[in-house]
Amino acid sequence: MKKVLITLAIGVAMLSATNAIAIEVEFTHFNGQDESRAISVKPGEEIKISIKDTYPDAFSYEVGGVLLKTPAAPARAGLTIDQKTDLTTHTISQPHDPKYGGYIVKVLLKDKAAGPVKVAIGGGKTKDLSETTFMIVVEQRVWDVDFAGAFTISDVTDPVYATVPRTNEDGEVENVLIRDSGAEDSQSLGLAGMIHLYHVDRPQWAWSFGLAVSDTSETSYMTGPSYRFSDRAAVTLGYQWAPVDRLPAGTNEGDLIDDPNVLSSLDTRVDGGVFLSFSYSFIPGVRGFFEKPFKGAFGSTDASSASLPTATNGADDNGDGNDATDPPPPPAGN
Image 1 (cartoon, helix red, strand yellow):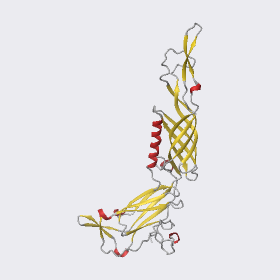
Image 2 (cartoon, helix red, strand yellow):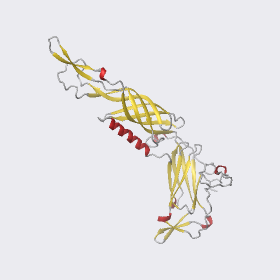
Image 3 (cartoon, one colour):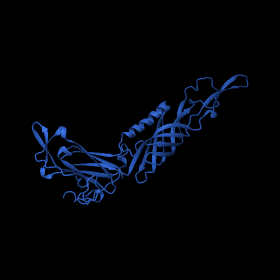
Image 4 (tube, one colour):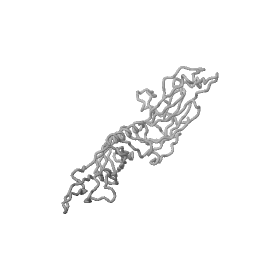
């Protein structure tokens, strides 16, 4: 039983580990078209923007309508690059600020006088790699989930039955069925997979759901409120439903037992009790199966008037040594 439960907990941890913390957004520069993406994030999450099939040597990258300035490249009149060997992926990280409803990503030529970059696509043909604008529409996520492995303590235990010999009035020895309470466990210990559902405004409180599978493929379910000590650890107190042993139909405590094998194959029934669990999430804030049903509302973003945050790339626009104090760029579209 422990081997199966440990496998379940490890499986939950592996499923959690496959979900990266950063929100990934991909665009393809070489398509030659403006693109937009819609994502769901919560405050403080990192947005990783990947621009595929681009050429960083000839282009700079801007988030939030602010030009990510880099040292000006020399004029490249008539520059031609190869699609297969020169185009690459440029990634920008942008932490999400909840007051913004979207982000504008601009791919701008470092040397505008040189004109578009020519990309050799084979067969003696070329295609222009020009300036492009991408837009990300942000939906504010208000619910999130963690997948976690948990150690559980429960009041749900199997009853223990036994037969004891008794001499009747005729002097014959009979086997009487009894419940041996002294041999029963007071609590049961186990491992389970837990899902913690919480609101991002009150992340310390969550409603949790648990699942455990025994070595006989019997499944138990648990649910209850949780207190999250951090993004990873939580304690849950709730109610559990689990299958427990029971006597065969028609057999009761105190019955005389003629067949000594009557207790070798017991049936099961569902019983309930209080449980306490301690869980740990290896990767917090998992987005997945529960994301769509709990999406929050989001507003529109006016690209011409929104003041959007900028991603830092080491450029200092006003020479004071601090990117944060650089003056804002002109509104998008200017």
